[in-house]
Length: 244
Length: 350
Ligand SMILES: Nc1ncnc2c1ncn2[C@@H]1O[C@H](COP(=O)(O)OP(=O)(O)OP(=O)(O)O)[C@@H](O)[C@H]1O
Ligand SMILES: [Mg+2]
Image 1: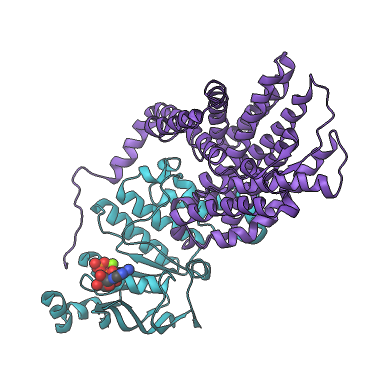
Image 2: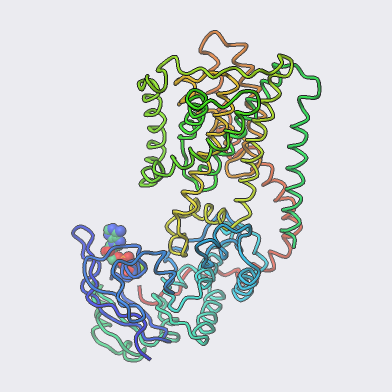
């Protein structure tokens, strides 16, 4: 299978800081690609440009073979690329089920209907809540959930749009190990159903067991890309981590 | 299933309340009390209309008064140039004016929505100031400072207020119904998402301009309808009153805050408490500007003691009580996921 996502020469600077400096890599269809790198190496910035939250200074993005001129968050989600945030973002004052229903794709006249969602959508949302062990909290406000549960909820939410590529920004950061296991299980489950992932992580155990290939970013450039064992043995990668 | 039942219970409660309000003038109360009723319903309608934009989408607007004034002038100008009969007939104009003002609001929203947060508040209050200025200075159209006269309705002295009371009640009921629809629908969900985190919502495929413009235009329409009824009732419109950026603007937001922003019944409850109090202050402290100070003091007290409003505070309490029963279940669910030892991260390479 070919590449679902290809980025070429992506660049972004903030004033004097070069956050992303001609970054190129691709995500193969059906892979769980890891994106690692020291703090401040530009991982989140790359994600922000891919998902349309930030305009890039240079470079090109190809999603599903089509060039994305100026990505826009709404359009990217509808094209089948959805993301989570490094610091979990949920809609705190509305309930957990509604958080999922918001993300169900609906446009045109369907927006003006009398109900929040049709039966099938609600059922699908309930299935996801079941999968993420949040079902008993369906009527709680999202803001009342623990941080780990919010991370799970955010992940569940982006699955409502039936995406083809999910970008996860540090899904395990600040989450206890029971939830990390749950997160891992769910990624594997949806991966088995054909979903492609790009996962940013610092948790090496998690990355090495889950991702292949792994792209290493340093100072906004891809340093290396390969299988987990190659990454672990690569001198450049070791230097980047130890030298920082 | 449970949601369906609760939606219908809500509809029933709404129907009973509106019916009770409709029967109120028959209880033998005097005209001046019905007059207070009209103002209470006007604030309830304006507060509910404000809630659509300020409470549901979180875009705190001070522009309600602008649309209220446009509705009032709209009615007066139609009287002057078209001739719409008298008696009950002019009431038929009210929804037409609402729709017209909603259309006018769209380009204004286009400008206002270039901003959010504090700048949005400033843009919307500027709108009121600009319109007041235009009403004062476009003398040929608006009659300038003395404003425009609307022919007085030929109702009997004893029942004169009643017709306006029912008209204002209708405006309030329609506004409430629209709010109830929004709250249970996809559109409302989108509005709430915009309020909670607009950028996040965009990343979930929500076309955020749909709920924003719907709330803005809907709010404008209902405010204008209240303004039109009000102008016919007073049979005059002039700039300081129609585009009152202080007293009226403050009152609208105050009823919403007092009752509970973002709740269905909040603005009504707020108006029910505040409007009679306001009329009382105006009576007892009327001659001076003191009543404005008393009014501002109410605002401060509300913000201090009920920062989330009456409805929100009591709803939270009721919820907590019913939660306690569910708590056992929830604790179980949480315990499953969160064992006592919380390892905050497993970072190996940091
Ligand atoms: N909005 C912004 N304004 C200014 N500088 C920024 C902004 N966002 C990121 N940066 C800078 O760009 C660089 C890359 O940041 P980025 O968040 O992409 O790194 P990261 O690889 O995600 O790091 P971490 O692992 O800590 O999350 C950093 O030096 C950061 O300070
Ligand atoms: Mg980051």
